[in-house]
Length: 586
Image 1 (cartoon, one colour):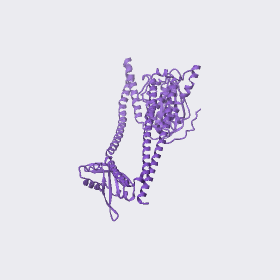
Image 2: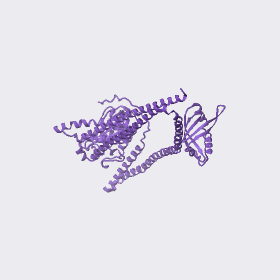
Image 3: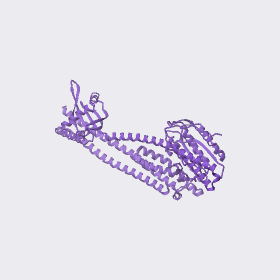
Image 4: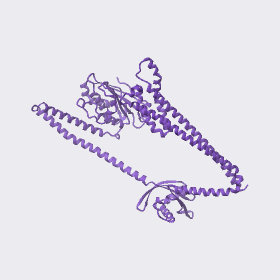
């Protein structure tokens, strides 16, 4: 059997193998499409279930007490309870398989979670007339977004189906062609060499076109040896994009080749080239190359080819400039923040000095000249003293707020000690208003001591300050472990264990629509003449919780007291087992 025949038989066998591989690829693509269909079906069904359960929620009325109507709404209530499961299931599918829909789903999930508590209490007709809830608009956005996601999924599936059909047709055609060629190859032996030469020329042209249209500079070097030792590297090939990368422009081909041979020495790449050839290991690096007066940053990839090196170059000067600009901006921002902190501290102290003088002179006038003034004059002095007192409190609270930092030292802290210290600070106010306080046993956590003291101090100060005049003030502090499934609901770190603290009072309360507003700077809901304060206390509490990777929110009704919930990590670094020391104190 001649060598040529062996080559033909080998080629025939190779063609059969290629056909088999193509069929295998086709089968693999089909399996992948089936998995995509299953995933899409599961996502669409889950979205439709969520939509159905939401419609049930819109019908359900949680305040229905009529016997017949209550029985009618039992099924709706059961379906409402499935909504969190729907959200979790869809969220996992989108996260694992549909990253393109992630942003849309986050918006839908957040809106559903926001509306779910209301849907569990009120039906659609009541929600439509309730101010501040979003009403029909929020529900319409949810339904529209779900329909949009279903439409997008169906469109995506249809596109993949068309792609699969086209690929299958192409694969079938190619496979058939290869089989026919393999069967006929023995009859066209005399054309084999001609076909091979034509194919080689086509491949050379194709490769040349790919290299010439590439944005990366590609240069192939050949090693020049003397006595088996590499002396230098000469250019064997380069594409059109290579020259401009080292500012080799408007030169002849020979001059450009010489420039690239000099580039190996100027960029100190010779030893790297030798290492690639000798060790047959690719190398990747970034270098700064001085091309005349211009500095160019290049990303280089060195790969061995025969007895030489193929060099691939990318200009990353813009990226390097962005990095330097970013470093400069960060440094400038850190300096600016430091200056602002120093300015705030100095300004607050400079402002307190004249305030102290105003207060002192006002008290002196009140003590020495009160008898010489009429009633209006004495009122003016009292207003001056009250205003300077509020201003002093405001400056002090602003200074405390601006000094809160997340990078302060964390340490193991017994919250019972913190609570006891705060109660001692507020002892006079508590006695004056005869406030009754009950607290469960609190655990030890990892926290910033001063910030924890500020947190409890402001919450208890508020509870005492806004006590109702119609009943004896009571403050209740409870503590428990936050269930794991609630972390996702509140957007908390799933790797941390959280406490759920509640500070509840029976004071004057506030309108529930202001539940988020009260944590803003200078937000006041009551008359400042009746209730003193700077409007910073709850904003400071929120900053403390943010610094501890926690969350604070409030619930209340006017005249019915307020409840502040603190979701606080037990540790800042690892997932600890739930504490076993959460027991009620006698």
